[in-house]
Image 1 (tube, one colour):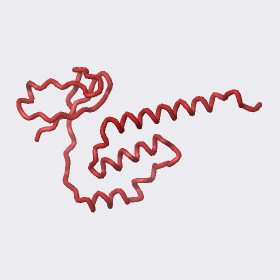
Image 2 (cartoon, rainbow, N blue to C red):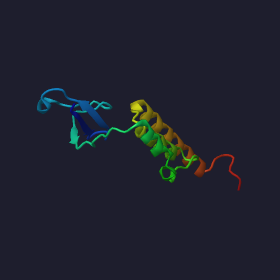
Image 3 (cartoon, helix red, strand yellow):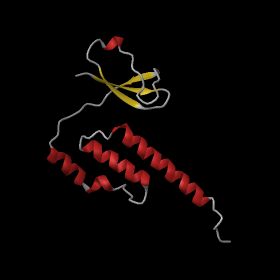
Image 4 (tube, rainbow, N blue to C red):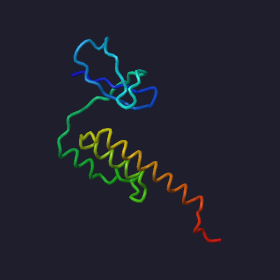
Length: 121
């Protein structure tokens, strides 16, 4: 089945579309911002892997080399990578929650660095 991927020129979100007939007449719209300014991407190929193969890949210690459990951004990248490895689409809700958490964490770090009322001199 032809699945086409497009990137939105407005918000940079990548969206996938199943096109069953006449791909030339298909006009994609961004799933996030509804923009029609989309550019077609060259999609990756998919290969069928057994569950055992996927679990072995996850257990590989070299895949955890850049994991820092105290860094929310590192944990978010790891969760996305593991979800993809297991063939699970975590969905836009997960991506937006992770992005939101990373933004909040970034704002918290800025506040801590800037000092506050309780800062000792």
